[in-house]
Image 1: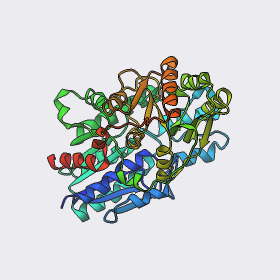
Image 2 (image 1 turned 120 degrees about the horizontal axis):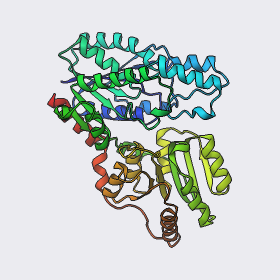
Image 3 (image 1 turned 180 degrees about the vertical axis):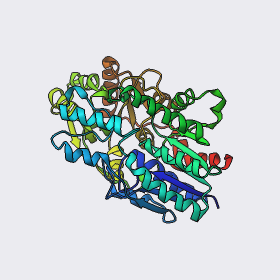
Image 4 (image 1 turned 90 degrees about the horizontal axis):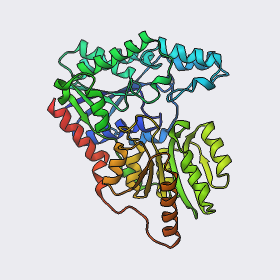
Length: 427
């Protein structure tokens, strides 16, 4: 029996898509006969942007989970800069931050490289060394962000050279769309770039979540390393939809799930809804919404929106299933390779997807392949408005506007776990 050690900062009771990837994959890898061990941070020490204890039900009983202490810089920042909300992740807007906020961001960017959760590493490395020796682990898997987790894999690979190491990079690192908004000095940038390169060179295999992200990372170390890169997308778990509670609505409901902020560029989408002047349309945000977006919808469509705070994952599935359409927006900029994890759950609902994305995006390709909706550039108000008008008209006339293709099924977590198993065996 193969023994795997999965090293992940995010694990239940943490919420969000970063948790779900390896909770789900470990479940199905266990079903395939792998013995999985997990090292993660103790929730008493962790800095989680959201909690979802319901995800604990997805942890296979056979999996041994070891939780460690951590030194959390984000908690220190929160106590030192109480009046300034220090962003846990994502896009800080320096122009709108106070002096103390900018100072906190500077410290975070230059004294905690590659990120502010690097304080977990020494505790995790010690726990991993004990498990590797005791259990004779065959393969370790490090998943990020936070990308500091990859440095744990690097340290273990140096300590145990015969150990096989898969570095799972869910997002770009130094190419993430908000990287330029951080307050790195030139020397800090170079240090971060070197860490990134060290991981790419020393891991036995690299997994990413889209083909374009695979090209991005592979281009950093040369074509001779091309075989170590593997694109294995996120997916959906059929079990999540079996018991999703219904949420009745009598309006044409468009649901956006997850975190949204100014850089997602939904202004023209909002303008299109406003221009329709349709009373029976509801734009429903389920998750985290920033002040800019909340003020935008209140100003432009005060009678056509609703905000629901973060809900447990299975409850979210109910909201998706009882919508008529689902909105996905990829932040503006060079984000063609970004495939939000929620896309695959959107696909599994077989609801119409309306996607706002840069031209030539991987998300557009998947939506088209699965005949699951349409993708528009952020600025295409006319196209968005026309599409919404047609969908609402069909819905009012009692037509079934569901997506009918079964192509989405290849993105089930069960099938993706088989891809990981093939990769592990190839090592």
